[in-house]
Length: 268
Image (cartoon, rainbow, N blue to C red; front, side, top):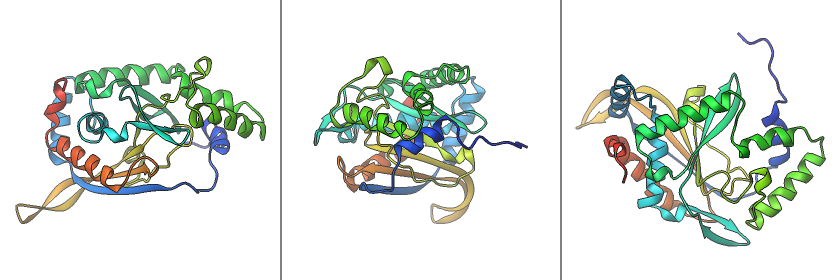
């Protein structure tokens, strides 16, 4: 049992500069899905030595959805115009140590197989836990060290160049694509049945996908009520670049891959 909690860790210090009261428009959506067969698939792959989780599957599913079903979501807004990203990268939130959150990026995630994703994420998580986070997330430590209120001022300057004008500050690891095409976070592993994410202002991404906890629930299969493993999917989408129909197409594709995870074993 932890007796001390750092209420002002690097991320909390940075968050105080990033977030203000909610004023931007976004679309929130959620869907309940049966993952009984998917969990069996994950268990079978782990027996083969491929250490994947539901997070790996849904991250790649979302990437392929952007490739084949909703390419309109692989975009960002700059100077009032929507621009297409050069590739599909996935940013996955991970728990590094205790309550400290970090992230790993899977570049060209739409081309990655499930076996490759397991290796990529394992290596990046090991590196991050060793203190070698990617440049983008390493910025939180630099921002956290700046006294208030200068922290907010500097953040706004960085946001002005990278988000509003689409410019890159490569020395700081900041570009319009620093946070990838979308973010995935499995809040179910943190004890939440469902979570609705925020669209972090600096990310300029079209959507964030939240994975909830897996629980055994009564479910209708072939007109019979049977116990199944069920989880909630939640998402926030940037209403500036998409509508509810895009979210519907995204979730339909996610459900398709949940039913056919073997499709992720080969490059599309």
